[in-house]
Image 1 (cartoon, helix red, strand yellow):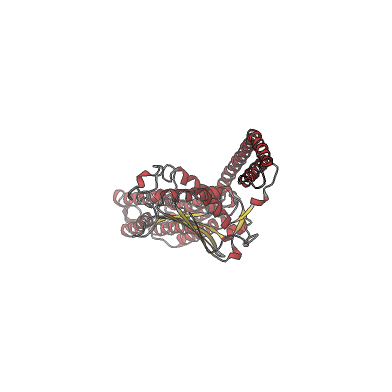
Image 2 (cartoon, one colour; image 1 turned 90 degrees about the vertical axis):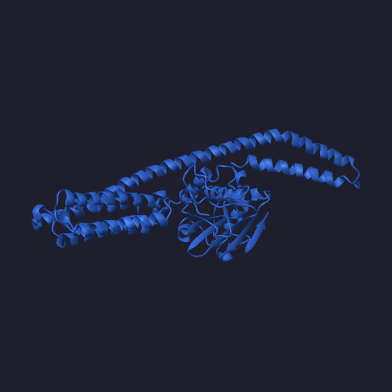
Length: 455
């Protein structure tokens, strides 16, 4: 399981939300439409209104398609976000070419996508987008339709002025891009430092609480366990060797001694490194996750897809254990009979798929799952109302946040009819896992293979 990546340079973990780009584009569409209509019908300047509205309508249709096709909560990969921002640059370039090129005072807006990219995307993507903007303003400086003006007159500005605008825009691309990146990076570093501090403090507090509980348990239980051991020892002496109770007394004495040994280990947790659980393969991690649900009456089936020799092995990560454990717990809670967990790995990706046969995710909220206080399960199937009304609200929000901090990507869906149930797929990039120190081979190679069932 992967460790936490260094957040300051983990741009994949800070993906731009699709809804943010959609809202910004709607704002641009409204501004472009207002400007074009004002110039053409209020000022009555001649201009190719049809072509301008067609370019604006294309952006509107793209926004509608994205809104229908993809959930609002989707977070884009870097290249996808860069492509959408590149489209915005090209669309504005076409609009400016129809309305005067660099002579149009709204030409300065062409640097906005670069600023958005600099605050959220990797530097190489921002550089590529900045290069596209430079090419666009260069083309606009030499090829464009006349600037709309009163009476149909052609307002021609000196070429030296156009060159000055070109230099200003290119300079703004470099300056604003670097400035926005540095400001965003400093904010990221500050947030990362605060997060790291909170995690360290929480861990220390947790360990301190465990130490106190272990010491208290050892103190409170030590005396009665010693008494039990003493009494069983005396009873063992008094009973004849052929007594039918001799075996039971010996078992009672051995179990009391075992309890004392366990308490001894608890009191020494703060000093022992715990190397026996420092690293664990995916199979052992899943076994630990499903172990609390052994007596729930739900069959938990585990399947492994991948070469046994290349099973991912990493340090024991509480974030992943909690995140996956929360998803499995909810699947068990809503399942009717079975929960299927499939772990798959290859040279490119590592994925976990958790599927249940319950009512599935409610269609009206599936696009907003992952936001706090969202109830995610359908109550359509009889008996589903007996489940806790909270569904996957805060629990799923916390689990999703912890898993995404490790570089995971979550995908949610429902089974296709006539089957019913929810499917949660968690995917890590194998390259990211390797960078985080994950070995491609199991330390002992003794994890389960093929499939297993836990009832």
